[in-house]
Amino acid sequence: QVQLVESGGGLVQPGGSLTLSCAASGSIISISFMGWYRQAPGKQRELVAIITGGGTTNYLDSVKGRFTIARGNAKNTVYLQMNSLKPEDTAVYYCHAHIATISTSNYWGQGTQVTVSS
Image (tube, rainbow, N blue to C red; front, side):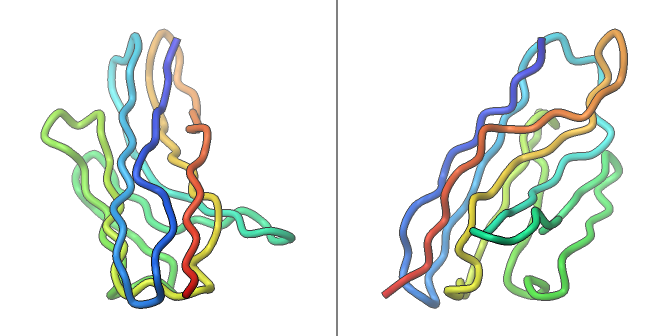
């Protein structure tokens, strides 16, 4: 059984910073890519950032230059450094990973709330 556990959400003022963390645990053989999605009230879930096992990254246009995704040294963790936060970044942020165990599946974290407000 695989679990993704997120941490680091909270309330921050516009222009502030937050770092989200996600750790995968369980009977993991390999992780091909990890990423962060977000879903604001009344909107569809959208991909914010993704990083492959080789370190290739991709970002939602609206967060480029402000957010940075990185894998941890253990490769089962992923971080999202969010700078210059805007009210429109307010959403529930979900960690996602494509993980091989005895099969290969997509896994999701439980979500962490990020609220940007003065």
